[in-house]
Structures are given as C-alpha cells and as structure tokens.
Image 1 (cartoon, rainbow, N blue to C red):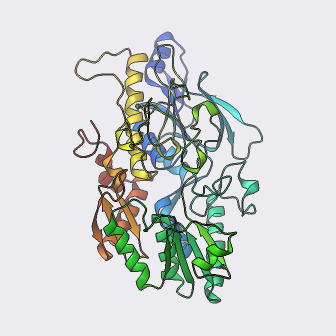
Image 2 (cartoon, rainbow, N blue to C red):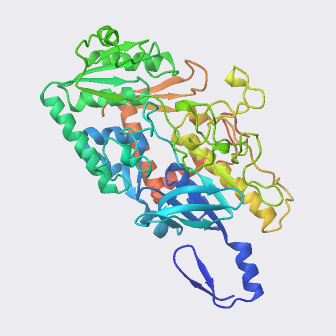
Length: 482
C-alpha cells in the first residue's frame, strides 16, 4: 500500500485499495490520553510504536510535582523540574500533542470534546481507546482545589483563583507565579513575619523546612490534626522530622484542628494575633470536571468526585457496570493515577481496608505509572482479540487486574536541600514501613531520583535506562502483584 505522512502520528492513503484499508485497520488504532503527567507520558511511550497516540494536556509543559516546593524558594530550580511537552511528545515519541482541555468524554460514542488553546469552541475527536490520567489538585478547602503545588489550568477554575492575572497554562505563566510568590516570601522574611503551615504531612513538612532554610528570618509554625507529623508513616520517620524541626526553631502543634475563625485556636498555638501568612498543605481534591456524574465517586478525599474503576482499571459507573464497552463487552476507557478512586472496596466494603480487593493507594507518581503499564497491557490484549483476531497459545488474553504496588509505600521527605528521610514498606496500616535512609545521603538520593525521572519523562535515554524496568519487570518480587 502507498501512504503519505500527514502530520505526526497520521497516515493518509494515496492508493485506497481494500488491501491498504485492511492494513491500516490492522495496524493503526487510535488512543487518546488525557493528561501529560507521569502516567500519561508512560502510556505514550509504551503505545508509540503500535498505535496512533494523541496526548491532550491543558498546560504546555510537564512539571515534576514532587520537587516543585523548592522552586518557590529557589526559583531557578524550576528549570530542572520542567520541559515543554510538544517537542517531547511529537518529536521524540512520535505521538500527537494537543494543548487544550478535555471538556467532555462520551463513553458510548467513544468521543471527546477538546477545547484547544486559542480556540473559541470545543472540537469533537473520536478514538478507539482512551486512558484518563488527568491527575488531581491539592487543597480540599478550596472549591477548585487551588494551591501553589499545582498550576491552575482548568478554564472554569481560572477566573475564581487567587492569581487570575497569571495564566499558568503557559510555562512562562507558571514561572511568573513562582517568581511572584518568591518575591512575596522575601518581603515576609525582611520583616521577620510569622507563617503558619496547616498540615504536617510530607508536603507540609517539606514546605516549612524549605522556608526555614532559604528564609531564616521567618517565624514558622506547623500544625496537624494527627498526633505526629507524616501521618501514617513509621514512628522513626516522624521522630526524625520532629527533631529536625525542633533543632531549627520551627514551632510544632499536633492534635490541633485548623479553626481560623476561632480565637481559642490561635491562643492554643501561641499566636494570639494570628499570622502574616498561611499555607494550607492538607489533602487532595478531584478535578474530573469533564466526566459524567455516574462515573464519579460520591465520597472520598476532598468530598469525592474520583473516577470509579474496576480491578482492570476500566472506568465504571455507580451501578458497577463498565462505562464504555464495544459490541463484545470489552472496556475501552481506563482511569489511572491520581484521578481515579485509588482503591476498590468491593460490593460489601469492610471497615478493615486491608480486606478490600485493592486498599486505598496513595496519590503519588509510582502507583500511577504502575497502573499505566497495566492499562496499556490490557488495551494491547483487547486489541489483539478485537482487531488483530489473535488467539493466545501460551498466555491468556484476559485483562490483568490491578494490585497494591509495593512502591506505593515509598516516601522521600526533604528537610531542606541537605537533609531528608526515606521510607519503604509503608501501606494502609498506621505506622507501617521502615525508615532506611536519612541525612545527606537521602538528600542526594532524592536529587538523583528527581533528575533521572525528569529525564525519563522527557524521553531521554539515561532516564529510560534507569527507570524502565522498575515497572516493566517480568515478575513482581514484592507487593500484591501477580
């Protein structure tokens, strides 16, 4: 057959014979990936050779979220955490990139409405398979989950944000926001201002210690509803972080509920005159505005709104039916990473989450990429059965099921640029896991992870050589995997 390439990831027939058409149908299915973060880029890499892949993201850049806190106190670090998506997705991976926002997903018709950047109206595109990896926001106290830790990019959220003059869909808009916040912190530091960090999970602990290191004149206080920092992580890690903050003059108050309108609350944390600046570092909030309500949870962190999925990661509705299927009942839309419900309680949920088919999974990058690989393999299996008419002689073509990945229990918490602690083996049980690395070796370890993961996401050779087999192993040695 004779073809002409028409843009990235597209082929146009110049000889529309039936043989040519059959060749196209057997080789070129279309995959839509919603979100260009860790999980979305992992899927694009895995699919790029065998499918026509389109990645849609509302912002023009990738951002290494686990390291973004340091950029606000050391702005030049942003360059090491980010890159523009179009050159990576289109030139290196050979996929198609659309800078825009998915405003609606139709499961029965397998179509998506996408409002591209600089377009006035949304356009409808169709697909054979779809993977949703759109992530989440981080502030459950704000209607739209607004926080410093993730750019405000959704069209509905931007007019109601605290910085509507900045368009963080652009990489330079994000940089401008970082520089404005840095300048504001500098001014606070100059007048020896008081700062309250609400939430002593790993985000809150990292943020307050970054502020202490780079702006030593600030008078910092951190509070948490729980009796210790780092939430459910092991006592050794909590004790290590607690001692670090004590040595560096950070006031800590635990078992304290945040009540900003209550004078007694402020008196109890020895700040009767309140503070000059507050940072909320608690919880997550769903941002699945484009999904129909029947596919979203009614409960969960931040008030619910998480995409429901079955054990194969296929999107489900509230009646436990697969939401988007073909004529033979095969799932065509999957939800992975931070956007999904993160756990499967089963038909009769037990109070002991350890007895769930999938206990709650932390919203971090490792399990998102693990889910990405499983969703990709399931789509490849379905494609072999439906389009390639293949039958399995040695391995089953039934879809894989998700598991609780052992890497979901790994947490590296920075304590400024020169100290950190690293936990492995944590799970859904309170106090689980082991602190195995700490001090400057852990700070170095975290820097290496950051640099090589950004390199991998940018489709760089060194990063891929280091990280590819973390998720693409032939067998699982730890965790709940098959």
